[in-house]
Image (cartoon, rainbow over all chains, first blue to last red; front, side, top):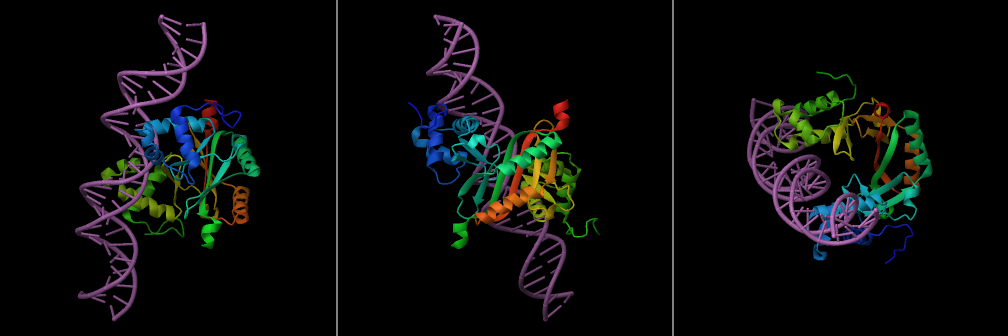
Length: 136
Length: 136
DNA sequence: CGAAAGATGTAATAACATTACATTATCTTT
DNA sequence: AAAGATAATGTAATGTTATTACATCTTTCG
């Protein structure tokens, strides 16, 4: 069995279940929501979901939204090439847009270098109201 | 009773207790840590801390670190003038550096404007290892 | 085969946060 | 000062998110 992405690691059963659930969702899901959606597939305990989420995050297939305690599937094929992905979260509809901005990440890396801060991960989350919700 | 900052609102008893605890701390504290530190002062329930934290955040005196589920007192006098404050969190020592970068916030506001995203709050958190810990 | 590494299953518990409701304090207007 | 409005407080219970501990099973690879 092969996947569409060349360098996607083979996923185990639980990892696939969780990843597919996130891919099929239109909004971020909490670990417990994922668990509820996967009860019928045999998942029974939070740890089964958290373990899968950990692996998926390591593989760059899933992002955690810190300000929501929730998770989304990565929508960008070249996501891992961008060290600083940003998320715009609509507080009305809950939709999340993911975007990468090179000048943003450059700026952050420059700061880190100047301060001798060994940067390992960057979290950028924007809260607000998206265009469609503002119009409605 | 006056405070040193001109436009600092008068704080209530619980708000002062929480704020002083955070000001005295050298690292971020969780709400429950704050509660533990204030048991002797008469605080007994999480809600007492969370309510104070809410008010302090509204007043711009305290920041919540989303990736840590913890809180710190704002160290910048003109913090509220900067819509996008960033935090650099050392994963070894737990110390947090707060900094404002105008070009960063400009870039974010430009994106939001282009996308018609009505930005209300920005979270920027950097994880890594600080200079002193890297040297040790 | 047999050891090592990784993945899974399950239960229990820890850590973080909110809802609901009753009460008390402060401020404002008369 | 009295009455009503607003804000703050106290307390209990509960809801939500995440981890620890331990046993088992599977795969890999010498």
